[in-house]
Length: 64
Image (cartoon, rainbow, N blue to C red; front, side, top):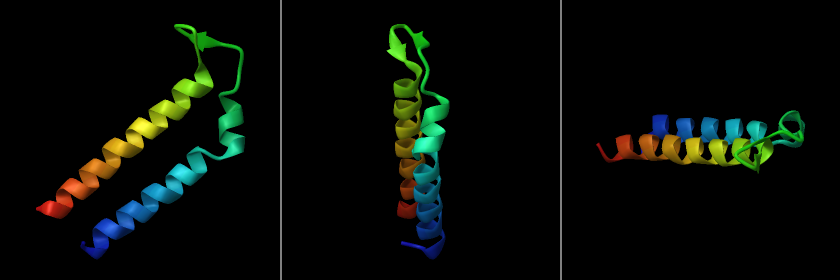
């Protein structure tokens, strides 16, 4: 794996650590919901999905 890809994965990990930290999660903790699903759950699942897609794109470039 190239050093550039490792650096991107480390940056992604740090970004996820920040985005899934308690103070940021508390910003989305409210009584509101979308289609019966609380906003905090949608936020967590959205960040999780974006992290999987980002990791896939970074690692896909590794194969090239």
